[in-house]
Image (cartoon, rainbow, N blue to C red; front, side, top):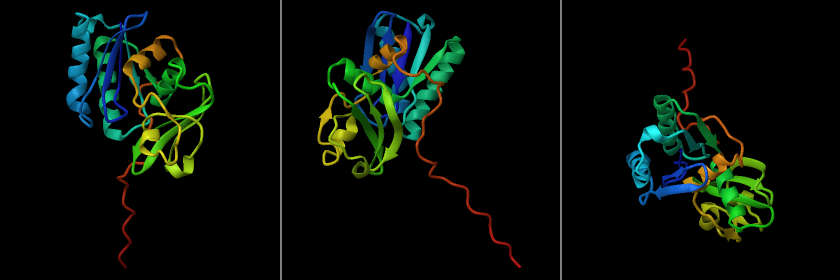
Length: 212
């Protein structure tokens, strides 16, 4: 039983995959509450199937790109569960999961972009071919610098319609699709390390000048 979850966006999403398909999925209702909501959602999807953590066989986690705080909650949880339960853990780029869902659901039929909210009036962006294979990115850009007439998957298209006039679904990542991507090896499987695209806000101060 594969447990999958993603905390790279303001909302938490959790799912279970039994080797054939997704058998349970839940998502948070409140944004920016990763620490408070991830563990209860994991327990809820397990309870939906009458399972306990010892029934799990693997863990999948979205590695971003995304804000530091949300990503840290998901990745620390994935690593901790994997260590305690002695399970393998697989990371996947969150934008890749959105791309695969868009292709498989028929939302796109040509080359397209995936754009998610990076805050600071920027987006996390990657480009894909019609089969969902990543062509470039991910990177962080201002919407005006990434403006396109191609279809754009993800919340970024809804936030910046002047730059992305062809929004297509889905808007948010789904843990169910993350589980499918990992189970079927549809995207590159990564170590559970955060995919940050910005330098930290906190920097070491320059060395003080010598007093003569």
